[in-house]
Amino acid sequence: MADDNKGMNNNSLSRIATSSSQSFLCEDYKVYKWRWFILFVICILNFSNAMIWITFSPIADSTIVFFKIDSLQLNMLSLVYLIASIPFGFVASWLLDTLGLRTSIIMSAWLNAVGSILRNISTIDAMPQSAMYPVLLTGQILAACAQPFAMFAPTKVAALWFPGTQRATANMLASMANPLGILAANVIAPAVVSTPGDLPLALWVMTGPAVATVLLATFGICSSLPPTPPTSSAAEESEPFFKGLKQIVKNKNYWILNFCFGTGLAIFTALSSFFDQILCPRGYSDTFAGICGAIMIAAGAFGAVFAGLYVDRSKKFEEVVKVCFACAVLFGIMFTEVSRFRDQHVLIALSAALFGGFGFAIYPISMELAVEVTYPVAEATSAGLAIISGQSVSGSHLHVSDAVHSTTTSGQ
Image (cartoon, rainbow, N blue to C red; front, side, top):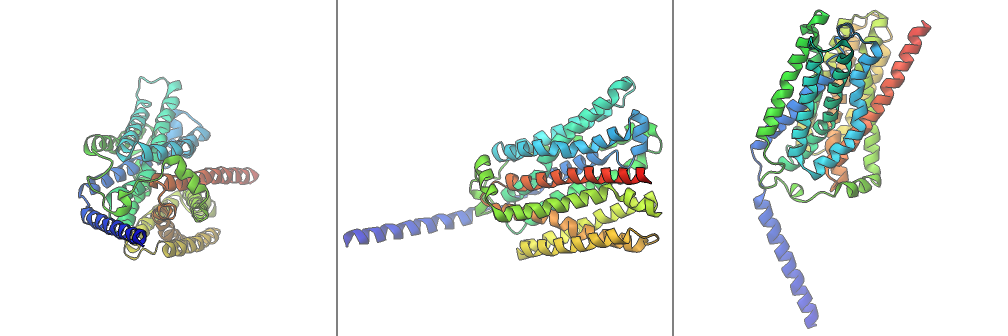
């Protein structure tokens, strides 16, 4: 009986101690305004990296003439991003979870800036013609290696620096910087490059944000973690990288999300890459195809903002993702069918806008949901694997689509 009383007393004391500890910790949680600066740096990094990636797509003819290359070499400048994302995606996940946010962001910023500067060096007059393309491609590869760090960082910074009511919004802001960078490059590059000789100027314009990011990251980000955590989950240590991978392999819900997200990202990438090839054979102009791409991204940014703010308040991640997936598929089919006919400008633009609005909303919410369903696996691991999956399927999808398009063209 005495032992029972003693055990009960020990349990009571343990509960009191735990309760007191939790009460103390709850009072100790704090958010810092500096979190917005770190988020801003990640936004600029993603924006700059996306501009570098897509630079040559809207000025393809001028690029081929200036560097004296063929279309296969031109496509490789974009394809290296998808190729590099697979091996360096695992490296980025590991570094973010082991070395921390600060080291990874600075490393990514420097890779991005050095790659951008190398692209400029490839255009100088003293550069031999035979060396121009190899130097240019090397710069693209370095920037491509920076991409996984930039794309995986949003979930990490949202989890470590932001309260639960702002995580989806923070993730959305950083994630949407990437498509906005694509949009900016599609606007800036054609505006600057009217002749092949203008191409070096366009590359210098793209270098500005990259250099600014290096300065902001190197001298502005002083710590991977805030002095005190914003939430209880941020205060807990994540699983080690390889242990987290083992847990993810056994998580059925995560792989369902991974499959859906990867397939959706591949469809979006293929559609945005082949707007010209889809619309122009039906009599639509290059300008209209470009406008459709811009409309899709702009509507997507609006949809992502609305969805991010909504799920931060409601916490209905699963419901919003399901609705967005269903609507994105519906309007993707609508675009596919309508684009088969001529003189359907309004319906094509509308379907592109609706596809972008619902499709883009999936990205940041899926990243946050991936973190939720795999907790306590580290954020960069769960979100990173989802992005690697999407990039892998995107690369395969682009290759198959390009092959089908080439076969169809040659058959005609």
